[in-house]
Amino acid sequence: MEKEKFNIRVYGLLINAENQILISDEEVKGIRFSKFPGGGLEFGEGLIDGLKREFMEECDLQIEVLAHFFTTDFFIASAFGDGKQLIAVYYFVKPIKPMGFKISDKLFDFDVQSVGDKQSFRWVNLALLAENTVTFPVDKHVVKLLKKKFL
Image (cartoon, rainbow, N blue to C red; front, top):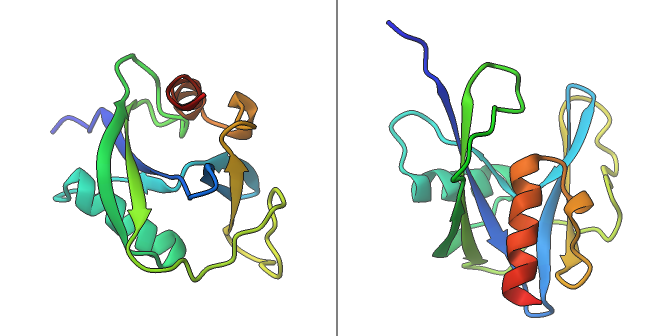
């Protein structure tokens, strides 16, 4: 049986009433990165269900998916070095209930998280959003598209 050749990921673009977008700062196995909330699709899961699961796992937040924004339309290798092609899908989302988790104004504000994988969230004003706000190439491309759309 041939090994899977694709890494499918789904992300949520959550923009608040103050025109700020939610960014996830993470540290996994000692490597730090910033991205939009979301992650890998699991086998047997649709994109919308996968995105809702990711938001519940990452920040215990129920979301409504509003609209599709972007799907990769160019080749990019997975950042995990696993020899797979990355397919990333981005949706605009909104919270169903008030957000009950800490949102910082500092980068990598891991608080008291001292062992294992770490995660924190922060708002970034859309007017100040830049490609270097996020780590991964497709996220950087999405930042350019968001700036075209909103600024």
